[in-house]
Image 1 (tube, helix red, strand yellow):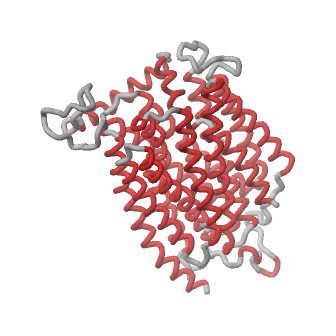
Image 2: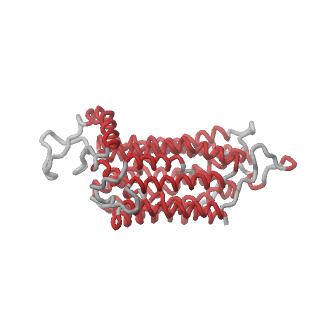
Image 3: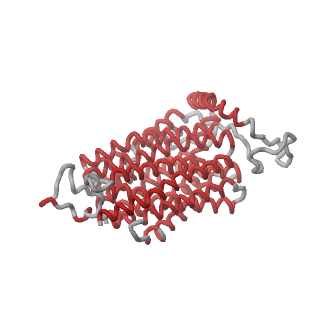
Length: 471
């Protein structure tokens, strides 16, 4: 029953969160068109910082002439993909900065939310995060001029980039619903069923990424971006009501509390004991943390630029990008429900995570070469497989390796590490994309995925040895 309720809470939260995805770059570009003073200052400052990097890169990059069919007389370019170009779109790197800021705030708030969940329970922090999200979407709506404005017009003078930045700040600081849902799943499932239970989180992500961007794109096309913000506000209001009226407290063991007769709660009797001198659970947990961070640097950075790549290469509209994200969500949902939930064995988390990383590597190579819709969809499907497997499996491992009385703090730190990767990734890969184009950015990402693959391969034998010690 609790898992079903969590699915509802997560779907409402993530539908609101994902509705902005297909319109994020158009929103940022709107403020550029309007020459919003704060946007202009931020764009100029960032351009000055990145200009030396771009200038150095331009020594080996030949920018195509105005005629796509003409060839350069100075020799073949280093990047041979047709029509690829170095772009100077301020929305790319300002958007990357906002994406990184959003994740940095999650990095700072996640350990605090986790520690609060250990002290006062899971329900109160969940309600506070839902209220924070509601305030964030309200600021977004006001940033676009309110529900009666027409922000789809670039001449609108009522929009405010400052309020939009504030919305992103509040949203990043209160993005704890997913983290707390993960903690609640760990509360109510045994370690053997943890990965299956966490599939609920993955399914919610997949459903939201299937429906949310599509709804956002349709609303934006028909009624303007302010309608998307209004939709997010409505969903956030409903989520606050669901959490307040229906979510029970699931924390059954307070910090420092011991079970009668010195016995552990049977539900958690198979977890690794990090306090035992005969185990190396803390070291394994640190290893899992490191894999998580390194993986998300690459994954988040290129996930952030995917819709821009589709728009630049294939001319996809906001609605088309919504359909693309919906396709990724459908594939991820199928993988979660039809593949991940059926896996068995003590090594299933490592095995699935490794499969997802290999799929991501292949997907990034395909996307680097994508100049037609079929290739784009193949690369996106591989991307979706990674999305459905890697993070959920690493999260399950972290929860299994954590002591129960500090589960909230452990998963908070784990999510903070992930947000560090999500903060670094968009800034790094948006800059590479801006300076060298999508071809180079995605191929470098494919090379980068090799690092977490090797780290995960090394993790497998250590976990197997740990299972033998606990047997």
